[in-house]
Amino acid sequence: MADSPVFDFVSSFIEAGTSLDRLESKGTVRLALKQAGLEARSVTVDQMAVILEKIMTHELTARGVDDAEPLLARLASELETHVFEAQHDSPETVFARLGG
Amino acid sequence: MLLLLGISSLVSLAAALVLGIRLLRLAARTRAMPELAMGTGFVLGGFLGFFLILVGNPAAGSGMSVPTSELLFRIGISLLGVGVSCTYVFVWQTFRPESATARRLTFAAIACILGSLWAIWTGTVEEALLSPLNIFGEIVRMAGMVWGCSEALLYHVAMKRRLALGLADPLVTNRFLLWGIAMGAGVITAFTGLYMTVSGLVDPNSWPYLVLGIFATISPAAQWLAFFPPSKYCDWIQGSAGEVG
Image (cartoon, rainbow over all chains, first blue to last red; front, side):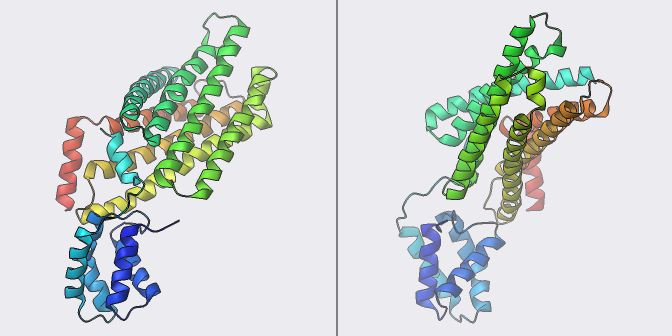
């Protein structure tokens, strides 16, 4: 199954701004998402913004990235303004709707 | 035991009808498949199908002629099959909408369920219920509820992690748990019913009737709490989430 465009965007940004390769950057983001109970295939912009703020700094620092904080600040800013294509409704969106 | 079964049947019918209509009205607004599938399943399977099975059951003592009661029973079983087919569609479209495997699994299951109805429409009802084809159909129906239960409970675990970070709504998180419980109770109900059919148990004081009565009540009650929670329940769930946070 394809990963969400938000996931791809963040992984590519981290790959370009650090010494991590594609596999490492994707794996790092996946692990951060997993800690928060999120999935690469369905993560949204709002959810990713929280991950960048609360989890990602620690994950990147643990992988030897020295300037993690300024990198993530730039990424958060780009994420806010980037336009992503519409995704399938997540199970959370469906269940929220069913409850009225 | 029969009184308990009677009460659980009424609870089931009422919940299915009200929830089904509500979801179909939502589907008319949103044009989205999950609510259309669940609403259709509730109305056709959970309400109409189940009602016809109850009325057409020879043991119900309704006073109808045997051919009439058997016809109603057959239609009821068929509609129940349609209802469970809708459950497959709901689980696929909600949890795995982009998965080709889930799509194939859903269509294969629906074909098996509809195909197993051949046994219901040929021969006597008693023979049909005990036929390998019908039992196979029952197993496929149970598998749909097992799939739904697993997906919902796994998602509930993920939602709890999100809740800890403020990324999830406590009521929606709880809704996954309740729906998972409803599906699980549905599996136990279906399995117990199948056991009773195969073993020929008719004593209303035997243990399967108690199991059936309990779990046939849990399923609609959990669905009701999931989609029509009373305000005190909502307050309790929100409050508990606040304490954990």
